[in-house]
Length: 94
Length: 212
Image 1 (tube, rainbow over the protein chains, first blue to last red):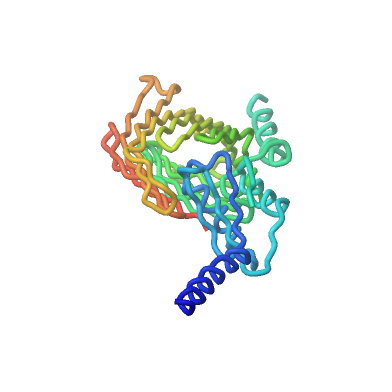
Image 2: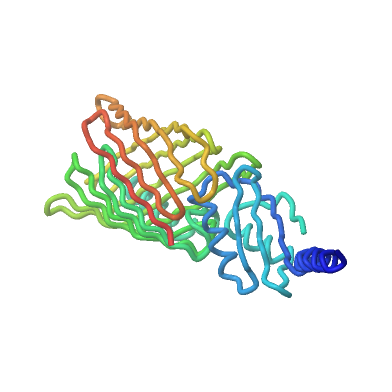
C-alpha cells in the first residue's frame, strides 16, 4: 500500500514539476481571418531558435507559442513579429 | 502636352509612392508568384515584399482581345489596414510602368489602380479598378472588378479553405459598357491558393498563387 502511494505521488510530482518548465504563451491577434495570410506569422515564429511549437486557432483568434526549456521570448519580440506581418495584438497571456 | 503630364505624374508616383504609402502583399521578406487567367487577360506576377507595407515585382500581362503584351515593374502599397477581432479590411494602391507591345508596335505604358477588400471567415467582398494608358495610345483602358464571396463552411487553421465567389467585371470605356460575370471557386491551404471558374464570355478562369 505504502509502495503504491509513493509511486503515485512520484508520478504526480513528475508531471506537476515538468509543467513548470514548459512555457506556453497565448497571443490573441486581431485580423486573423485568412490562413493564406496568417501562415506568414507561423513561419516567422518557427525561424526563432527558442520556439518549440507554434499553433494557430482561428476559432479563438489565438496564437499559441511553446518555448524550448529555459528559453525566453519577450512581449516586445512577439509584438514586433506580429506587427511586421501586418496584424495587431489584442492580448498576450503567459 | 496632356500625355507628357500624365507620364510625368505616373513616373513620380511609381518612383516615390513606396515612401508615401504602404502595402502588405506578403510579409516582410516574403515573395509571391501569381499566375492569373481572367475573362480578359492572362498575367504572370512575381513580387518581393521588403516590408508588409509594400511590394515590388515584375508583371507580364496579355490582353487577348487587343492581342497586346504588357511587361512592367509593378509596385503595390497598403494605404490602410483595419484589423478587427473577426475581420480584416484593406485599401491598396497599385501602379506599374513598362513596355506595351502589339504586333510590331511598341509603346511605353503605365497603370494606376486602387483596391479595397473586406473579409471575415464567412464573407468576402473586394473592389478593384485599374487605368491603363500608353504614351501613343496603344492602350487606353479602364476596368473595374467587384467580388462577392461566401465560405460554405468555416475551416480552422491548417484545413482546406473553400470559397464561392462571384466576380463582376466592368469596362466603362467600351462603347457597349460591357459587363462580365464570373462565378469561381477559391481554395487555399497553407501558402497555396488556386481559383477555378467560368466567365459569361465563355472563358475558363484558372489562377494560382504561391507564397514563399
